[in-house]
Image (cartoon, one colour):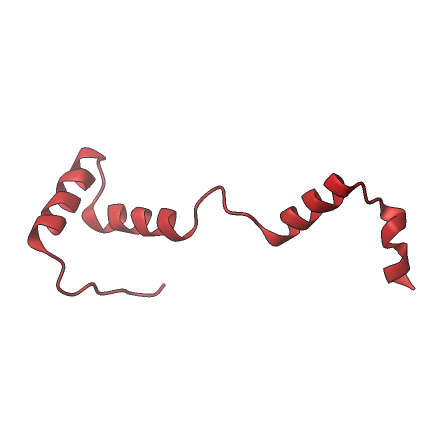
Length: 71
């Protein structure tokens, strides 16, 4: 796994992270990892394949419409 160092983190931010981590029964490191993961990989992110499938359903495309690409 990669390591990340955050420099010049204000003391009040570090203190708030420690307090919130303790309130959630987590270490500060584990809590910050969770925050970062949720920030960059939200659960409801749109995946390209899902978006294309939804679009084809909305316009009424069928498998037969895509047979031309198999030739």
